[in-house]
Image 1 (cartoon, rainbow, N blue to C red):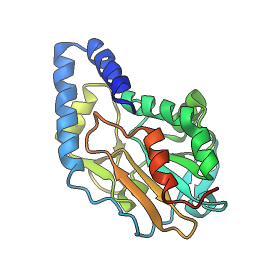
Image 2 (image 1 turned 180 degrees about the horizontal axis):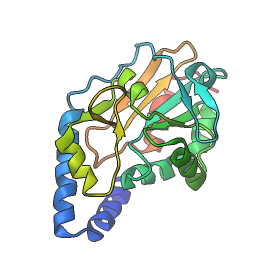
Image 3 (image 1 turned 120 degrees about the vertical axis):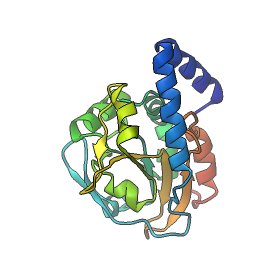
Image 4 (image 1 turned 60 degrees about the vertical axis):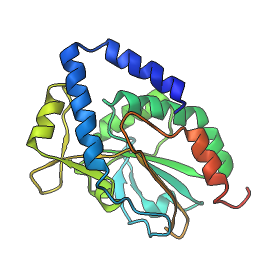
Length: 217
């Protein structure tokens, strides 16, 4: 996202919070960023793990289906409640035609429920591939799952956010914002993980990076 847009969003978010709430938010971001820096997202050249997830429109969507007509950009976001994620999704909606021109299918994965995924897709006009990864299994397979303990979860509770429990383990799970361009043979061609919750890569810059990795349309 353009830095000036983020600056405006940051001011708006902070203006709506009390001093105590800003302190909690800062603590959440610092803790999450520290945990995310320990992750090892799948790199370019690795094979993308297969998956099948429910979509916001009630279908089951698998990786093979996403790749049926060409490469796919798989983007992980934290959830419908995340202000910066919502702004990021809005920028993807504005630039979706640029990905279409490259022949790249967009798929968005979060721990949101199917219903929340549907609402997000409808809000931003992002098409059908809004996928629900409750439990975080797919984020874990791609190496972008941040696991939070009880103390971390308690901070989120104070903001009214309900986190997704990890599959069969006593923890709570969120993906770190990340993008993977996957080729038709399931090879990851591009891998990007945000270094901070306060920043996002502008989808326009992502398109420029992807152009050098794909044959001319």
